Image 1 (cartoon, rainbow, N blue to C red):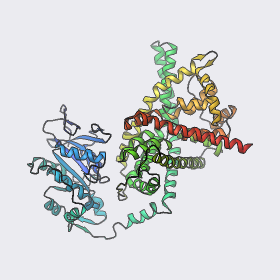
Image 2: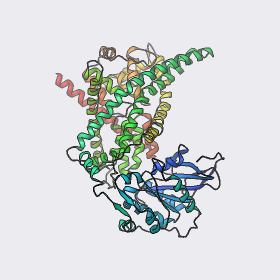
Image 3: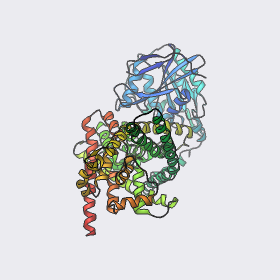
Image 4: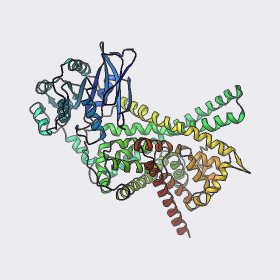
Length: 631
């Protein structure tokens, strides 16, 4: 199997989706199916790395296209959004239905889960009412075999009148037969009128499957049910979620330290080489320092601090997603969000935000209701991303844990950090409720939540999805926003107003209001200048306190704590800084994503102002209470 090197022929169907062909006789195949049926695994097995992603025209719904070849035939594979039916209730279902109806696809391959075939059959029957050029791909046959589920694929094919192919896409089994069935379906003369009629419900799907599925082990679901009694139980669900959160942060913290240090050393070495290179070509000293100590140092700092935690956190998140646990999180938190007049799917976007708030905002696309989607977007920044972790961990370690560094200290730091995050989750509930009874009134919507079977995570797929699709994408956007910020910070630290740098002058201007919040002007200014990326907040504070002209890092927490206390830090300052780190405006990358997802400047400003005002109020209340108690 190979990919032909033929020049691209690009066309656009009436669905508004741009189709990228390499040859005129390429077969356009739409991959349809319910969520969690292995559709993406089938797509990846057929296309390998020859794929790209984009958005449907006029929508924020993502699509993926890939190119594959079998023998002399080429295929353009379009992975359409996963959905349970073709009713127009959400952007995903609307996009899937319109693409199938448009006729752009020569063949629709409907991917079904062999473990729960009858439930998947409803969508297949609806698609067959639109077109008879359909192939049914019964995936996960290996899992069905383990559960001793036997499916009469030939009988199902005879009953439906379309090709039915069994596959185990993870192992590549059945993919060649799927190609052959697609070729046969594409060559078949179209017979139906393509008019969409209302589906007749699951009774019809049950009739199709009746007698074709045999359960040789009636207790095949017993293991999953036992796990669900633990992971979704009234008593055990919340503690397990907390422990998994704690374990994820702990592994991220202890795993990221060493590679972060290696990256810092590497970038410091490259910084010297870059400076030498600019010196050789006689770049003027001010411009040379501006580029190296300003732009390069900030970008390198962000890469060194962001990359290792994301490279650990996103795979851990994807493992929970791939194993089937994340839908259980949505199930556990659904009642809480419904009491806030919000959507239970918001819990999934919160989980994504731990890696990056911009990724969490993008994830809000899974929420069908526009009102509930806005609530999720606006409150997303209450969940701290990994860019805020370094500052939080440093403050916790210096002012509240103490002692020598080690595994035990990392665990205690993770425990305190998890406590602060629980506070952020609680604030998410409160603000979601407040928005639902004020600016975004309405009743909570209902959604169908499928609890997929527990599965063994696919390590290779996890590596590609977490590193390529999430880590590199997020890091690239953050570095693009940080480059101009590095220039601005350098100019402010090196340009003077009278006998003061611009940085010191602005810190003095902000100092009165900052003191009311338990901070000082330097800390508040560092948060403002750190808007492009939260990772540079602490280095800016150090730079200002040391009166340096460039970002500076102090790796020894004892030395750093002494510097902070010499500049007036107390436990009140430490807690106030942590609270404001938890509740303040989203980073620049997240703000740009909010603007893109909402298409509204008004809601983007709301997403900035609401957490900021809340953070100011919380810090002021805490500062007043702390000083009152001390008195």
